[in-house]
Length: 198
Image (cartoon, rainbow, N blue to C red; front, side):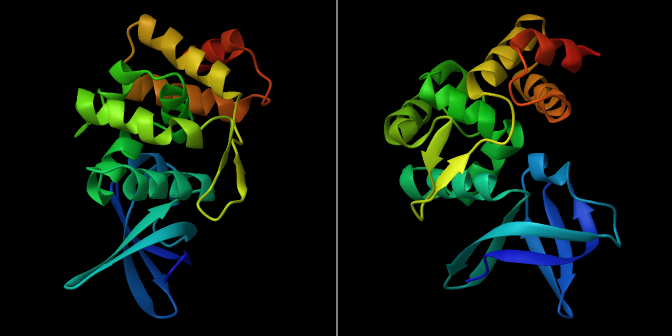
């Protein structure tokens, strides 16, 4: 099984990248949140990979961080009704931090805004993943996964604040992630919102 690919970017779109490694070009499906971090064509890129092998195909799904890949695995392996395509769609709409916070706080309304997720699937997400998410959660191999950005509650509150100001969930999430990357991990909600708006 392929777990990670490091190679040169040959092609890149918002949902797919082709990496050349060892003389082979690997087509890797990626969420928009990873596409934002893929370097320019001709540059080197490293992705954590989840492989799906079927009778008639082999598909690779790539992520910028191990945490994103492990969360994707939780979605597609632990929640019935969510396959790789819906998993990529969910992670394209919201970051892992926001999704984790929404699941931990049982925010079915926010989860229902993801494409391919209705109210019943959002409720199933909460029921099946609530005990597996939070600021620190176990990955599939049992190791701890720690969020590298702002505290989850602050992150979620900042996104909610931007949504109150009229931003759509995906845009509020993107702005908050950008702000969190510029600030220390203990940044306040106010600091996150102020940086996101500047």
